[in-house]
Length: 225
Image 1 (cartoon, rainbow, N blue to C red):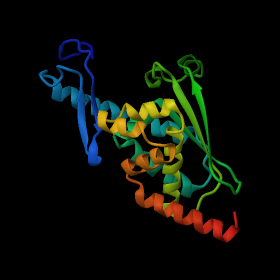
Image 2 (image 1 turned 180 degrees about the vertical axis):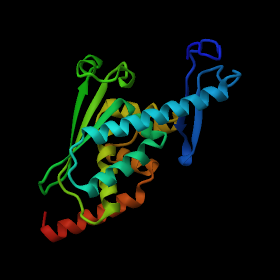
Image 3 (image 1 turned 135 degrees about the vertical axis):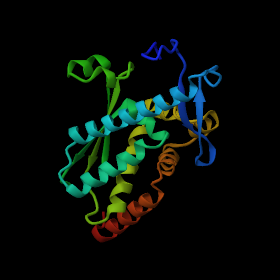
Image 4 (image 1 turned 60 degrees about the vertical axis):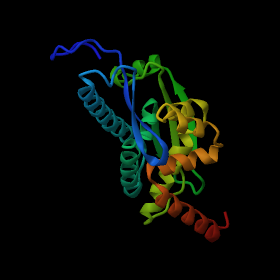
């Protein structure tokens, strides 16, 4: 943090809220930050900055996605707000999630496309929103949802977002950056399926995920697919 109107000294520290054990969170800071007289103010500024970034990211996702059902649109907005409002959800800041509702009866799919900062600047992206390492574009194709089943639809969205972000090493490393060292070590040892379950739990979507699984099984029974 550089000099500001209050004349605070130039600072190269970093303050971050990370996930610890038992769904608790802890403040992780650069050595020396906690003894600094500006620690509380820096912590508040970091929270405000993350909140603004979260709101901008959700607005961008909704604006660029192609979702035609009001039901799915409402579920998407609420799901994203809940996900981004968790410490683990901050791992999504380096990914641009886009949702496309496709009128086909089949399982949802995820496409992952790395995008460099140069490409983001070329298309007129706000430089303040572009991480120096660029974005990873993660496109989630929603081909089947559950009319009238809000919890199941939110479980579907949470499952697909978790699957998208944990599907490759880049996404996994972004998640690890939002965890404490013990939790990061635990996450590294998980298989892909366990990583999805871990994210769903820490995002608080266990009930919605169970509803999603229940409706998925019921749909297979009805259709034989």
